[in-house]
Image (cartoon, rainbow, N blue to C red):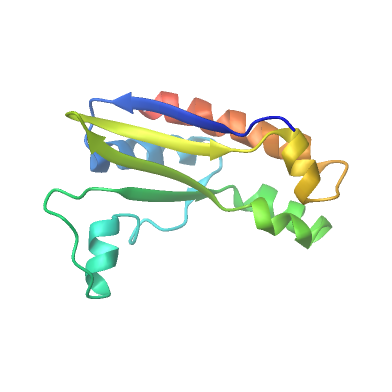
Amino acid sequence: MQKNQVYATETSKSTSEFAASFGEVTKKYGFVIHNESSMDMAYSFGKHGAEVAEGFDLHMIQICKPEKAAKSLSANPERAILMPKFIMTFTQNGKTQIRFLSFSEENIKAVVDDDVFPASLAETYKKIHEMIDEAK
């Protein structure tokens, strides 16, 4: 099996600044951020009464391309297991770290028996890497 890939990069922007920039970039390419109001995990945990360490600044940014996702899931709802796409940001050593997990085409095929989906999802992963780079 091919390895899955953790795309790791960093920016001098804060987690909030990166999230705002990333949101603007995603709009240009037809993507949306699903969880703008809840991507700041300190806020989300706090809403549920959970305390986090001082300075905790993890953002979990969920993105989607609604037009593509709607067609894809209409064609095969089994694809939904791999549809959520999250970009993680957090501060480490004075810089905002950015992480995104993508799966290899071979591993996508192992999860979803589908002739079209693996290549299509790999294309989306590539676009997400490009959008991250553009926003940072």
